[in-house]
Length: 382
Image 1 (cartoon, rainbow, N blue to C red):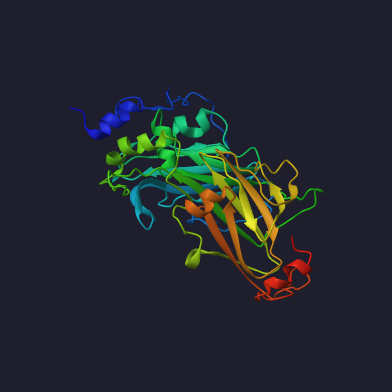
Image 2: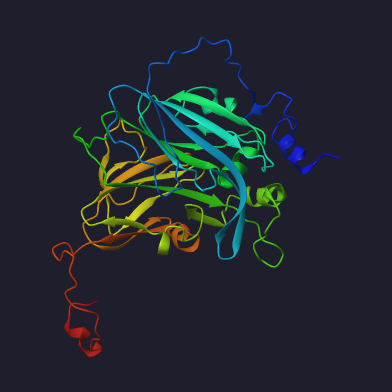
């Protein structure tokens, strides 16, 4: 009798034994051993420690003249996560967070990632960088069993924001993605960001908002089901997934993750860059009470940004960026403007802005008071 793990791997076309040639997305791992080596010995190496979203590791906005080798380490962790008051997800994660961490490099840099698949995990995993060239975004070269590690290097040739996600093959691909295995990388131009006129533009803060759609099954009583491990959740989750109706649509892994104590913070007059990714479904970010001063809707910094957008569009499988200078203090709601998904399913974040109110931008002229309905006919009211 097949073990559950072997059955799951078989469904994906993946070998259960580490001695058998692995495959990723239906293709055998590529043999690159005969390719001529690249001499990068003269390049400077720097190492960044990844941090959990919405925060981003320290980085320079303007890069040095020469490219560098930028080293990252990331661990794949399978674990149960509470995604709402009444719902738990058997999650698969990059570095233990949903979404995975945002990586920041500069155009022309070499990204060198050491990827660990925890020995406590039950599944094979890999990583597909939408920013990379060849080998299925690196997916063909990074498939690792539990207890294994691998190291991938790729050249960041295109500036912009890009999704990365797990793509181990067959039906495992969507399951791993909607179980939390996605993140983003931002490749800044070496000279930094530019506005619509080509003039340099900087940000005071950067936040990474990863949007996820989850598909948590319910039992016969209508309660969300809870599972012992990732493998146990597969069959029931697959049935919900194939219905294409998510049970939850959330920012950063949980309903309310970026509200209350988790709300984003800024000061009046600061310019904040919001990087937003969705690895599986389309989204429509909107900042209630604000705008997108500069929006790279497609996330690609070689293209001039759009200006003054009220709502922008993040295509499934992509990441975009929006820059806004906060002009008023107070609470701003950053939402997916499919308001059903924002209000009912969880895709809402808050930005708390400190400062002094500017009546020139908005002023309440009359506080709410009762009025005499007898006078309605003597006014311009319909």
